[in-house]
Image 1 (cartoon, helix red, strand yellow):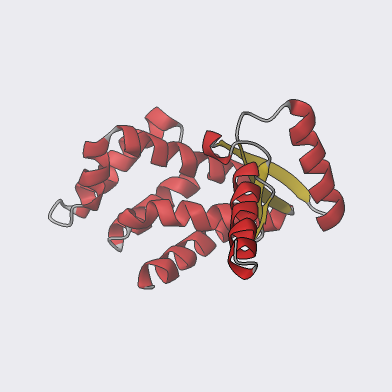
Image 2 (tube, one colour; image 1 turned 180 degrees about the vertical axis):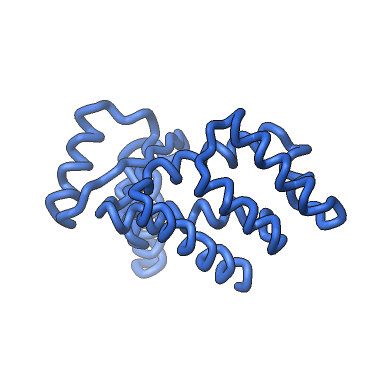
Length: 186
């Protein structure tokens, strides 16, 4: 719970800085790239979180990385703040919250679509248009392929789930038949 509060607070501060500088997309990309870089360089991720390593040394590493990764002054200052307050381990949650703030600001809604096979362009466009019309927002499709649903789609948007998968329909039909057999003595 405290982790989420801290992540929201820091993401909110970073978002305000990005907004005031007119760099919401730029900071969003920097945050993504930095986290991806840290995932690939596990020792860097660990190094930044180690409280026994001098803060000055960790800030110097960020300064060196800023040239390598073309990080902005705003982002470097933010990383220095995280180091100063021993909050670098919250970066993934900060990204998640920053992403939510960015999407809200830009009027974007993420629609998660699970399908048995990769969506054809026409299918993705049809789903996108349907939700844009219904919600009057810009829609971004986040697709996941899951062959075990057999066919159809499972769509998750704004905390609601629409399950039109063949797997679920078969399970529902099976349960219906099972109930009927029990009720009618079959």
